[in-house]
Image (cartoon, rainbow, N blue to C red; front, side, top):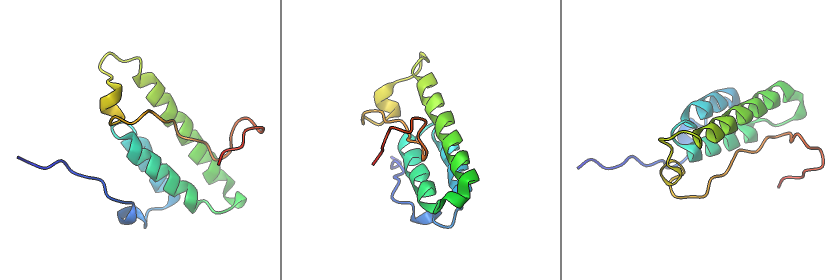
Length: 106
């Protein structure tokens, strides 16, 4: 019997730019939300300063798109929360620049 492939770390993807990580996270979010979380986090670590505001906006737009996809999935008849989220409680992605200026994220 074939073994299930496992996801180990981001070291294989360290040479990807932040934009490439964001684009790939958009794609993988359709079937593995936790890899998408890891890749979006890695992309946010690569965005080092406010001078990269276009990349910050690109990241936040991707977060909105991925979160909208996950919310839409819950309305589909084939959606199985435990299977999709791998038994872990669902968690939406967090923007780099929150919409509400009063919200402080750690």
